[in-house]
Length: 116
Image (cartoon, rainbow, N blue to C red; front, side):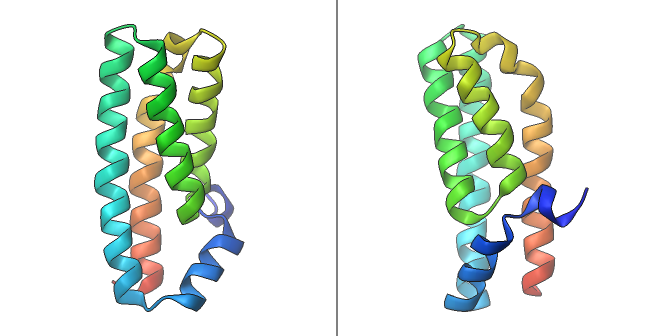
């Protein structure tokens, strides 16, 4: 996995240039908790065959990931959101494990990059 698979470099650069590392690490921790929680709720929505909830959770993950520069997570979440919007939310189930792995890869890589 390359850096561009994990990070949106312009966003990461902007954030690291404007925020101290300890604040970035704190925000990163919040991102991980929220994204993991939203992913669990996305799994629940798919299990309940709730397309609206699946779309909303996918959108939340995508938006938070775009804001924080988690490019790989954002791509997967956008794909899940698009499937849900088209009425094919169940087809996004195979994206969930890669999304979980992408969240962890982003957190690990950014933590290392920030020296945390």
